[in-house]
Length: 495
Ligand code: BES
Ligand code: MN
Ligand code: ZN
Image 1 (spheres, rainbow, N blue to C red):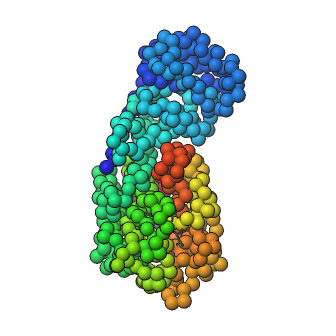
Image 2: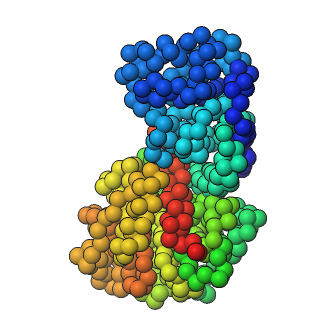
Image 3: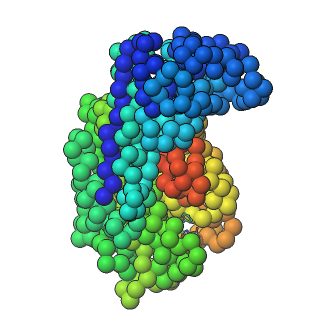
């Protein structure tokens, strides 16, 4: 199992004389006008004017803001590399984070000194570094022991006390995002429903209350839609409930629901072979919910948030659900299963109904790698948002925007939900080829009490990418952990 190594961050008070002695890479800033702060000036002096040459060059003039320049084996420095960032003194939070991402890509596993003076967004720059400094290489013989944040980063600042006060939150976010990525990257022979549940059980160490319902419990609750999806697999269905009650005297409660299909073959409506291996990530919604809970607990968020994840494997077998089967959901509505590959909604409808019945939440957000159709609509740039409530949806959009996680609202409406009419049952589980991600959302909407603000987030396109994304190398991105953490911070924290 991949463990998350502690962040190796050292914070020291500004000391110009440390520059010559620092090992590895030294990062300094230069403004687009070529202004040097005392640290850059010291580097310039030690290296007999290399920065002066750099800023008077055409290369520097033509470079975009945020670009890095490297000087290797600089004179009179113990360091092997100087990295000069061309950046304004005042930048947005996201521009600072982007610089951090570039630094992480450049640094490899070499130790580093950030000598950035009083750069105002130092913590965001560091966030960019630590989010990008991730590797999932436990199944490789030559796995480097120095990946993901285990190499030393020294931050030099005039105000170590202030910087230090921001570090716990940085660590909380990093650890939540990395937990999500680790779960998504894990193959399905390892991350079975049972293994997933036992990894979530470990979150109790953080003060999260964990409950695990097994198949007998689910049967007693009437969750036959959920159970039907898992009946062809030898991995049993599990419903894991993670409660972070950080504001016990507050009656607002957010519930997060995640699709946790540990592998989606399609079932009897079997998927084609090409690309089927990607379905190891079909538990991405559940992984994001777990990551958010971990972040909230690690930063001791004064909020009440309950995460519920339906863990199940969708397999074809002699006991598998058939196309045409009719199942009765916990809500009581019957569902005609036209296509066993539209399984996520069958899991979510029961878990969402249970969440509303038991917790009477003030809001509900579900996350799911629900449809290939959302990738056709929005590609890998944006998650699809669907909602019955403009306020909550706008808050999710705002949070996503501020964290540089793409999100785009899609429509719902009667004309879509009527596509789910079944000849035999109350509803069928697919609505045909057109508007596939919308009819999937419309299905879920039937299991949401109209008075409860709800946002459904289809993360099929963003949970995992084949090439690197803004904050992550290729593979699991951790999309959504920061968005939902920010949503909680902005709307569900006491006081
Ligand atoms: N897990 C898939 C959706 C998916 C596709 C996620 C690609 C990530 C990448 C989901 O269970 C599914 O199979 N959906 C079907 C629905 C269809 C049968 C109505 C789809 O999108 O094709
Ligand atoms: Mn499917
Ligand atoms: Zn699926």
